[in-house]
Image 1 (cartoon, protein in one colour):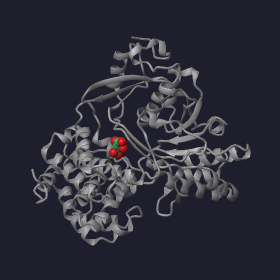
Image 2 (tube, helix red, strand yellow):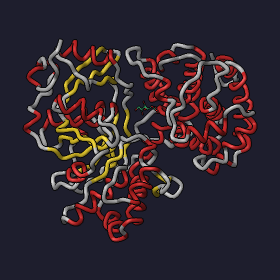
Image 3 (tube, protein in one colour):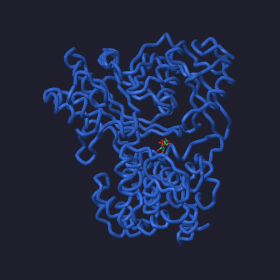
Length: 491
Ligand code: CS2
């Protein structure tokens, strides 16, 4: 099969979007068009346009790599989304992308699009590490490489904060209203964090602009959820078999999806609620639930599972001992949360277990293990003080922390050499490699990203230490087996 996807009339009727993509204009510029964006924001928007039209198609902007642009442009932005659940497989070609560009070599086209009158929303899925946030002060980190470069040269920005600030400046000069900035990364109160970082960045380059942004731009927070493994050759083959033409940009995902959005869009917004999103005043409880339950147990199972030889999350779930640790973690995490009206945390936990078990989803533990220094605070460490306040056992969080440190130690005592993918990989490796657990723990708890209350919690680290010692000297499977003998685990 040689022909490549580029027009919807090539696609069998069942898999086509029910609208003519060219009939609708662009209202959203999206930074960071990875697989998650293609399976989530773009999919919601596609279904919404099918239901009620609207000039809400999306221009995608890659910040670093040209790959996504090179895959999408020859296909006129079209790609296949394959959703796999217990009920079977559902394929659909998504028509919501109007175009794809890359701003790495030249930010002008991206800035022009962000500054266009028609752009109402700039959305982002760039991963936690790309922002350059200083979470302690809700500002920007001037030492983050992209932030540092953009502060030196704010007219030719390359990073997220630089691009948003510059585009808002252009809008202000053109007397256009500010766009809403919609952060869709797994960060707690992601809108508030990003707002603080953008305003701090702007203050360093133009104080008046910073004031204008503070008074005019909206930064709604969101909770986003859809498990989306990295696509591979099988994904592309499956897509081609379904639609009958080649598709280099196909992605696969699970059936489940959730999106809770703070309803603050002064320039208007798509009615994403028509296709299942929830608009609300306060997203933070949903965010904490998802970060601590889904993402927290994901991180724990990724570190423990990867070192126990489980390539995929589904393999972790078919190991009785590990599956029990996942259940223990979900239970402990749920008890650190404030109640949310209409949500039953034990039902949510059951649903997560089903999703993790999904045999059709090949989600690599190694993929989730990436960037732990950016993920551990909101997923695991922030739960510790709430667990204490609620009288909940802190051991599950200590176990997850030990497993993470074991991972960043790069120790090969029970596995072949592997890469540590983390913006702080060098610092963490230096701190953890070849040292005794007690020294590692002493150094690690002082790191800036560890919340103050956890740093000071001697008992917490006294649980981490022997667990880590075991994990660094014996096979991970032994540590897991011993952990399941803990009294609160019923096998
Ligand atoms: C995962 C998330 O890679 C990871 O760290 O925990 O990407 C997770 O799959 C999504 O947040 C699910 O919505």
